[in-house]
Length: 123
Image (tube, rainbow, N blue to C red):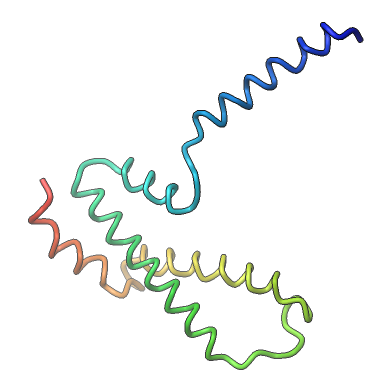
């Protein structure tokens, strides 16, 4: 393989990587959340989504604080190295928060209350 063949092979790959970096939509979890709310339609739909996400975050934080009150076993789910367990629990709590907030039967009602109070300010 000659040098010109090598540059021909890598140039499109590098261009593709640069394009992907320049047009990346998600910077972090907060930016991803903002994008989901912003793309959800009109202002009232965005308000409804933001209120539900607020409730989801509240429930997630509540679960994390509740977990701190539970006595921990020396040999947890992943052994003595609990960095994996903490990461796993964080993911589980986030998903539980989303599931509880998005289900009308399990929602705490914060999202609905926030929406009703704020909808008169949205066009």
